[in-house]
Amino acid sequence: MITPVVKGASFVLVHTPDLVPHGSKPAREIKKDPSLLATLLKHLRSYEEAIAYPPNQVFIGNMRPDQLREFEGPWYKTHLPDAKRFSPSGEIMPQDEFYGWLKLSDEYGLVMLEESFLSGVKQKLEQHPLITEHDISKIGNGVMLEAIEEKLVARTAIPLHHNNQLIGCVLTGHEEDDNLTAEIILENLCNKASGVVAMRHVLHSFDVTPERIDYVIGCDEEAVGDRYQRGGGNMAKSIAELAGCVNASGSDIKSFCCAPAHAVVVASSLVQSGLYEEVLVIGGGCLAKLGMKYAGHLKNQMPILEDEMGAIAILIGKDDGVSPVVRLDAVGKHNISSGSSAQNIYQSLVVDPLKRIDKRILDVNKFAVEMHNPEVTEPNGNGNVPRTNYRTIASMAVLNGEMDKSKIGEYEVTYGMPGFSPTQGHIAAAIPFLGHAREMIMNGEIENAMFVAKGSLFLGKMTKLSDGMSFLIEKNRG
Image (tube, rainbow, N blue to C red; front, side):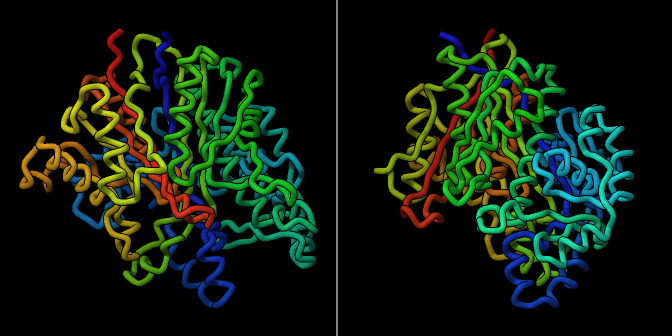
């Protein structure tokens, strides 16, 4: 039997403060109160501040999650003096360069960028390790500002700003299709462009030629489609095309925040079955969630921390004798009959799958749960999401007779970690620790790690069910 392994994982952030007003929550509130825009703009971070923010360095892999405990909060007041843009397999990309990737991802001429702005962006992109000469030529030379203003006056486009200056626009995809409005086109292109960056990073960092990829699975929160097939996809294939995966096909998996966990399990199953040798899981950023919890940040005189989109790329392949193994005999799933209580959910996702391989909760060295950065969620009254999840797992261990109730408070430190992920939904659900876990297992720091993700199916108003998926990776004995 073929054993699936995690051959690589890349994590990318794109810092896009001028896109915060395009987030779903800010856009709705600005429409009701236009004066809010000026307030939002005053609370945006600089790119330098975003790079020096400790949780961001953890997300791209330059710091371990537990190192966050060394900093006295609030973290946004801590500016790491040696923070780097790039990590061994990811980066924090500045907004102006991201606009260049946005244009590169545009196949239908729907992104217009002002010529002098684009000229400066191209000069910066030419130095990027993942950009080719063909990419630069495809981006083009831009247009006059007057051409952009004409589209905005005609209401056939929405503006793009950099440092609060108009530098471009995004056109509507079809004047009579509500699923191809300029707002949705921008949302989907942001997802695609950030996903392309992450995919190119994982291929480059782990020395895999794009031609070797057989299949790509998208696990994003966008809805690519038209009036006849809303949300039809296929984002995976569109990203794979721009990454040069000419021998790959692909499809998208949707399950709200839980989709990446489903995607890893499906990818591993495809490899274990022998159908494909190299499968890529890709998840681009979610524009709609920028500034989602801005109200709590403004109330507490904080910068708006939801000013960046996250993207992930995970390479699942056949056993190479070195990379951590994905234990498909220890996959947990939230059955329809499982119920919605925390105890029932964690019984299905943690206790039952571990029991199948004769392991207990305390046999797992590290658990990754919903890794939302508490500095983002707590000011808005949403609490410390990872801590709540860890306390629930610890309580399950108490119920199973594995530990004393007095140890619940210590469990998070030993078996968990502080939250560090941007609140990008699918991006935050356990997956951000996968790159760390892979390295820690290969370095001998831990033997295994379990990833527990949950999803809110009820948000679509089709069911009152939630969702969940878990998987375990462990040291390769080869």
